[in-house]
Image (cartoon, rainbow, N blue to C red; front, side, top):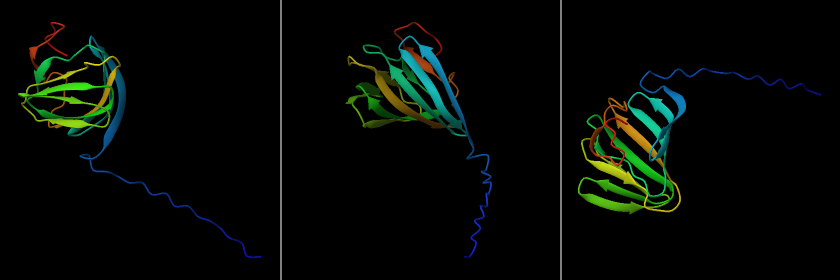
Length: 139
């Protein structure tokens, strides 16, 4: 009877610094709900955002990033520039850099969405608020 020997070779894949990412999973509470940073890397950040029923984020703009929003559950009322649209489960929208926008939950269940930010600078201080229900100056 022949003997079979299995060998396993493990290779380490080294990614360039422009591709490497870090998993963050830090949740921050806000008056309108909460967000969790799921992953962040050079030029992008992925968040899970939950908006309480009847609440909305500030009407705002970012100089250094664009955002993609994908609705996981609930209903989103999105204002983007002069356009307003209602989105539900598995629908998405794009918010270009330097465009005023607002996210709102007009429904009766929590709104959950995934936000993908792209840009050279993704700090929370890149927010210009035009109107805020909670009288904040920074998010």
